Length: 483
Image (cartoon, rainbow, N blue to C red; front, side, top):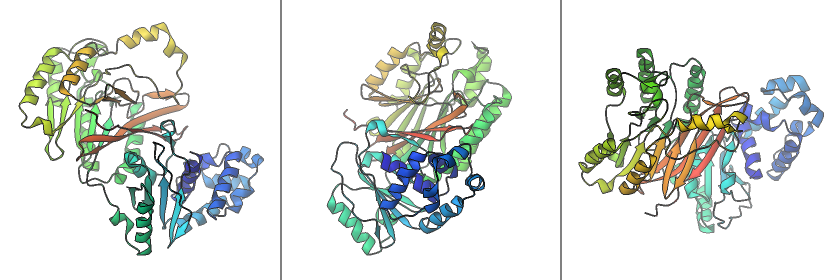
């Protein structure tokens, strides 16, 4: 894992992710280890090597490299720019080992015909698949983690991942380099890939969420150009688009979805959450609620024909006050009737969207649990947020052999497998998760293989809109379909 940390720092320097690499070089121990790693690749950074522990104490609060120069009176920014200028336009190849103790292929060279090689020496374990400030070409490798071991081939403008399983695959790669073939064309293999972005619990109309919305757009603007697919991006919004269902917030929700369609050419699918249909904890008058549903929902089943995907949109807000949810037998019967009307339904993958969580979920390990979350009163409050007929839904999912279920509600992103089914929870895309100074927005990205008709990888992004913490990306891999 340490190999990757040094590689990540190096490429954050190369590609100008200033806030990321400055955090790294504020540790004296890290600098010493990083310099040793640079030496392996014959890269010299004498200014960085000259920093002492007392220097780092002086720059602990710096977030810009020019501030570091000013305080230390050392041209560190110039040195980093020179390194960047040297390597930015080059082609880089990063070998990534597998996750299942596959043999590691030794790559003994560092440069070949202006192509630079790097190697992660130790395989990742599932506990290691959480990354701070990953350089963005590495997102390509994470999206294709189901294909590890392999190599990430990238430069400033392009990136591609290809599986490398033995020395023959490696020899073939080297031959392409010798013959000066375009590696990005040779290894382009994204024709089967389709991407799903899950957003949830935006609570548009709440003043504190505007900054989070700006952060979300900024994060997506960076991410989405890195998603190579012949298919349009699919966006799931799993409820609580609005803080409350008034006319102003409906316009905000509509504008937001139109923005996703326009900016990212996205196919947007959404469902209602409890905040979309209640005011001050109680269900709205039936006629007003009906208007909201007619305005926002519109359909129970959505078919994406070219990828053979059926999206089931469940309304869990139809019964129960406060934040409780319920699917109801009648709704399941209506959905069954609609599904039965689809010809050759066995050729489709069925995905389910609902707002309320089916199973209990918890915070990611890096988010601390506060004292009040452990109290008896909080446990009582949590019971007011449940899906009251979860066993009925679980039985229905089993009968229909549905493997992928997406929900929101708790503002906690979560990835869970139960009985060969995956329950993917969306956090708040505008920042409902708080810890100390940090205010995390979060969203999920899934890669779907259109030939295998299976979800392959899931990335959970955490961005701190308060800028107190780094971006964090957690990687999960869907196992092979055993059904």
